[in-house]
Length: 225
Image (cartoon, rainbow, N blue to C red; front, side):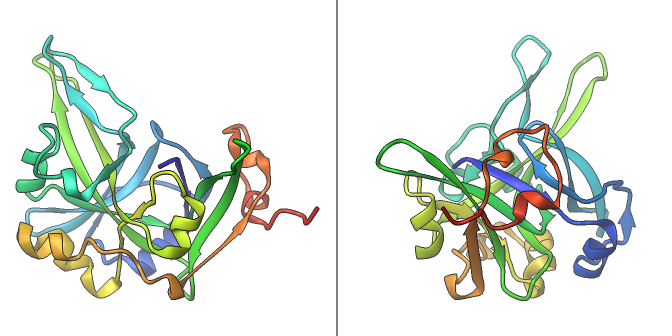
C-alpha cells in the first residue's frame, strides 16, 4: 500500500487526543512520507505521552547497528507471525498517529497511478493504530520508530487501492484508551475496516508525488479534464 499522510496542527490534535505528557513538537504538514518523523501517542508509566518517531521501522541489526527500513505499514494479520513485530505487539507497544487524512494511489489498467485524498466525514482529525519499536546499539545510539497497522480495505478504499486492498486501521475516539492500555486480545478486536459511509475521497493533482511540495493545495480536488 502506497501511503502518504496529512498531519494536522497541535491545537487540533490536542482537541482529539488526551495526552498527559505532550513532549511532541510538530506543525501542519500536507505531504508526509515514510522515513520522516511523525507524532504518535503511546502509554508510558500509566500516562499517555505524545512523542515524535521515525515513520518506518528502525530495527537492531546483527552487527550492533540500526537498520532503517521502509516498513511504514504492517498488516494486522502479521503482528503475531512476523519476527520483527511479535515482541512489540505482545509487549503492548501500541500507539496512535493523529492525521487529517491520507493519500492513496489508484492504478489504472494502462499503468497510470492516480493519487486520491481520503478523509473522514465530520472528523477533521482522527487516530490511526500503530506499532512502535525501540532500537539501541551498544554504543548508546537509540532510534524509536513506528509503523501504521493496515486492515482489509472497505469497498470505498478497495476501489482506490485496487492492488493490495488495504487501508489504515482507523480508531474511534472512544477506543483510543482501550487501544493503548488494554491486553492484546482486546486491542486486536479494534483492528477493523472503518465504515465506508463515514469516509470520502477525491482525486488530487500530481504534485503530491513529489516531496518538494507541501501545502494545502495538495488536498484540493483535481481539475476535471
